[in-house]
Length: 196
Image 1 (cartoon, rainbow, N blue to C red):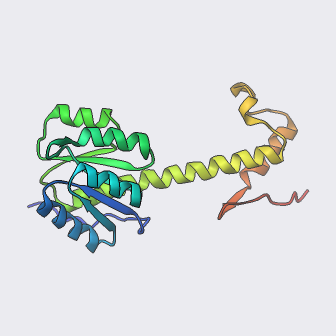
Image 2 (tube, rainbow, N blue to C red):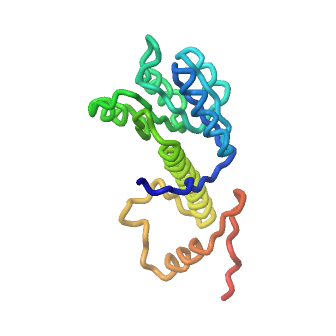
Image 3 (spheres, rainbow, N blue to C red):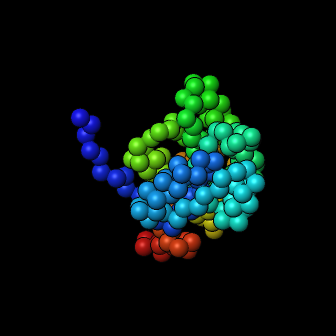
């Protein structure tokens, strides 16, 4: 007997997800599952509808079937990666060939699921996608904070050679300590007043 797993923990509850699947019954049943977990889910059943809805909705995650009638999910994946590089694509297929999975990942899919799958598998895939989105947002915020701190300190980080980024002078060490004290909150950079 398989152990029963709790549903994965999710963040970014307002995440938009699109299911691009020509099997309408399968797409609708998947939508029902994801709706019950609070996701904002949309369905497209062919290439044209998928492009139109992605353009309009700009979802965070797209589940793309490899075979969409006469169209290929791979061509759609390539188009999405060039037009919407921040949208994560998960390829889904009922044809579990090793080359299909390798091709999907090589062409930019973030994940790969084989149908039929348990609802917890798709929830876990969504969690992985949302974690990546969250990490990218945090990385962007930290980069912005670092650039702001460098500007305040009069450093041009883009023109510094990598070996000179960490200076050992007392002034540089003090500046690095100040940078460590920076708090980022709602896009505002707060530099604590020097207490010396």
